[in-house]
Image 1 (spheres, rainbow, N blue to C red):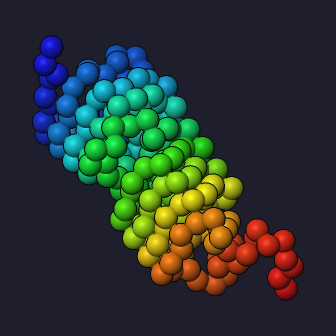
Image 2: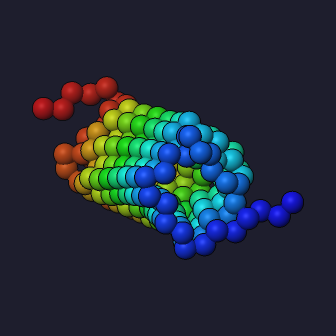
Length: 190
C-alpha cells in the first residue's frame, strides 16, 4: 500500500493524541501548538517541516524520518532519536526542552541547538562535529566516545566532558564553561 503524500499543510492546535496522525509523508508542513505526546510516529516521514510550540514528549520514533526539520519552542522530553531512520537525518532546535532524549550513535554533523535545555541527554558515540550549541544547558548530559571536533560550545553551560573519552580536537570552549573539561579529574579549582 502506498503512503499518502501531504504537502504545504498547516496544522494548528491539533491534538493528535485524540485524533491520531495519518501514516504519510509530510513535506514542507507546519505544526503549530500541536500535541503529539506519547503517540506513535513510527514510519512517518517529515521533510522540511517545522514544529512550533509542540509537545512531542515520549512519542515513539521507530523508523521515523526527520529530514531538514526545525523544532522551535517544543517539548521533546524522553525522545529516542536513535530509533529514527538515520538516512539524511537533520534537525535544527531552538528554545526546546530535550531532557532525557537520546541521540545514541547518530551522525549529526553540523547540528544546531540554540537556547535549549539538554539535561541528561545521551550523546554516546554520536557525531556532533562542527555542531553549534548556543546557550544550551547540558546538566548531566552524557558524552562518551562522542565526536565533537570543531563543535562550538562557547556559550554552552553545565557540560561535563572527559577529553580522554571523546574527540574534541579544534572544538571551541570559553571560560568559565571550559571547567567542565576537568570534572573527571576530581580536582579543586579555586
